[in-house]
Image (cartoon, rainbow over all chains, first blue to last red; front, side):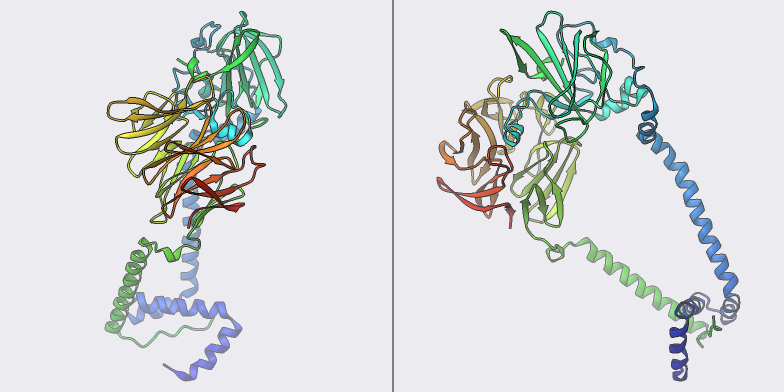
Length: 255
Length: 263
């Protein structure tokens, strides 16, 4: 080790720390990786072009990663519906077809996302959930539902519209309003006045008060309006009990 | 930049230097990965589990429980954080102080081997349909599940049913005119939290003995081999948080605002 060079090195560190570190790094690499002294000399002589080549490779690598990433991520982005959810804002949601599988029924038989049984729906909060009662001091008179992965994969309506469409589960008269918490709400009462269905939290409603709809008619888009902490549909079934309506477990009316 | 001076090594010395550097690097990497696999307790900044203002601190991880229907359950040594809207359940082992697994299901209970969960209209243990829907549940053993279900599916009143898993036989254990708000089995004793639907008074049923409880029983859990009851924010307690120890037939308040679940 040459002690006489220490003051010189210290001065370089002070004056040009980046240049000093770069030089030492290149010297180390040259010494380590090239076991032929002559090649090491060559590397040190041509350090600027070599650094230029390394930087070019680095920029080219970044470019390739961006290009390849875009090629591979594009189908994933398209498949995940992120782009659709952005573009759907500009689509007219009122061209959604009636789902004939609901039939023209006065008694609810299907879940409001469509599909058979509970295939398309996950219940996040059940009818008369004790935890809801304990937290809020009132009964949870319906079920909270979100679509399953099966729904997103297989629902024809979702494939066509990229919206989670809620369907009328009975035929009847529509009453549309915003509830006391700001929840966009639709009630459908059958013509016999024996069943009343109530849906809450729509992001947009597709039917108006006073109209008559058939079961299977799209009535709204699932949302998060009102007393809600995330996108879901609150679904209630009421039956006539004497002169008053009584909420019953909606799961009993999903076949 | 100044001219670079190469060191005065010959070919043999440079090769030796190369081998040395590679060996040091290899030793460092082996040591690093061996140490990284072990997660000693000392690495945790927080060795406790507590709930404060609806924020659940599980060792160094934080979860918000402010949004219904998110909830926390315990089947010692397992702590379950459930977010039904996703749906996802995070399971921690309190003995090893590690997260055991994440499951894309909304769990009712987990005993280390079996999962109890609702799927559609019924409750399942693993893939086995139990033939009824439980509001709450507890895996008492590999052969017996305790299920809090409704006396009538259209009314709020609960009952406790014991289910023989192998034969799917159901036996009513306790039928109430009230709401069962929590369940746990600690030291082979069954604890139920009860809220009177009419007076809104709260009780704890300890096997067959009922004691009055001054707050809502949101969660019954085990800590240091003793039964504790957590009262989470509720319309019936002015949205306060407290926890109590159950000692025989008495309950003793431990703290307001910070509920210790593990220490």
